[in-house]
Image (cartoon, rainbow, N blue to C red; front, top):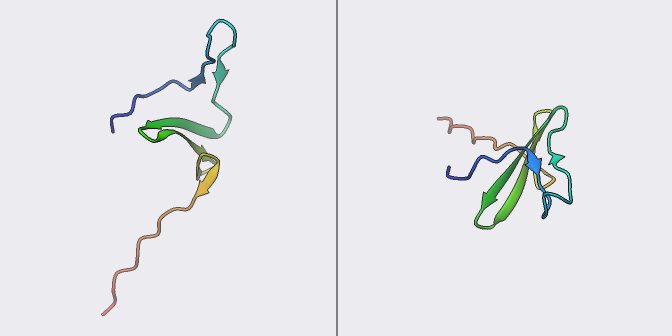
Length: 67
């Protein structure tokens, strides 16, 4: 993983015109992932995962074959 670890603060275009906007919310963890395809917002809310506002279903591993 080679993405930079960014602080949980969103900055406006001009730092002097807009105040810093914190991304932290009680009970919610947020990460901004920068990739070559663009930025993604990853949120963990009460144990559920959301990417760009859409819930991500956990992957269920297939059951082993029974003999």
